[in-house]
Image (tube, rainbow, N blue to C red; front, side, top):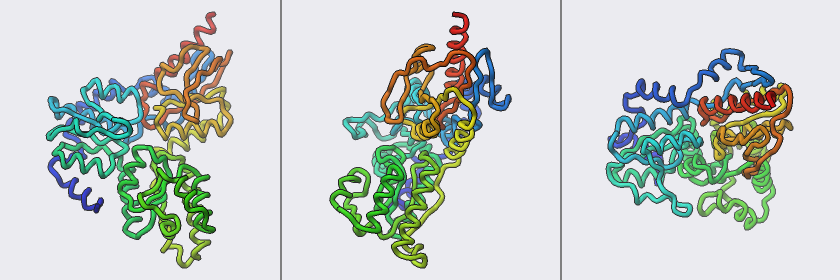
Length: 402
């Protein structure tokens, strides 16, 4: 399939919408009332610091809703306004935030059902409106929707689209796309659908395994078993790694993506020599500005003397997990929560560990004066952050009274 030609054809279809419907002002008022926070704005205006009683809050200087997420949510609201009676579907969560996705359901915007591990597109009929989320959708899903005669509202983040353009360039040059990401993540699934040959590496350890295979060869069957769910059909490591290009899931840790890029650049230079490097290696900057800004702000925040760190974001939010990883690597007591409901009491907190498991920690809130670092992922509304901060204040005030 010529994915580039299909995408170009789709974008010229009268059923395809990517620029909203002219209800921006109306929707902006609604979004402000539902997701923004006066308290958070006050903290921003006070050099990202707030003290109340025994609690001092240090807020990261870049956190929460990024431009791409805000745009996707606004377009979803506009879609409901513009199509008040039509059936509206989303191919996946609009963003990785439980409160926002619940709000979609309340607006009668439904998620395409999943049977086993596959989406059931049979529920969609001609004329239905289907929203593609901020992470995008695979080219195969777009083709199904186009063939069904759906109205497609594409809220894909432009940074994700930039990665798609990058893997198209790899394909044109007959380079295998090595994608730094999680093979199950919606964004990586979409990106790989636009690639030709591809291999998905989760981290530096997997990248080093691939680099070693490029230089020294290895057990082909072991390689294919290791990446059985993370490579293109018919992938052959003995021939498909002669030319490689680097791409990434935009929410991965910036520093690791850069290290992986450098590793493969050095690997190809070592194998083919500097003169032939350009024929065997391609790299384009596809690191999302918002992801980078939030990671940089987190790196700055963890330099402070903190008693604990709260990272707020959906449990399936990759960029939030990366923020949590920074705190864990620095040895700071840190809890990843998705909503204020996880603060069970002043003694118990339910949180997501880096392993993905949910756990309950006791005595999480220290006695006496404390300094709490707060950040949130790019899909987290300010209102959710406000609720968490107010609950911490409440628990500490109650403890003092007791």
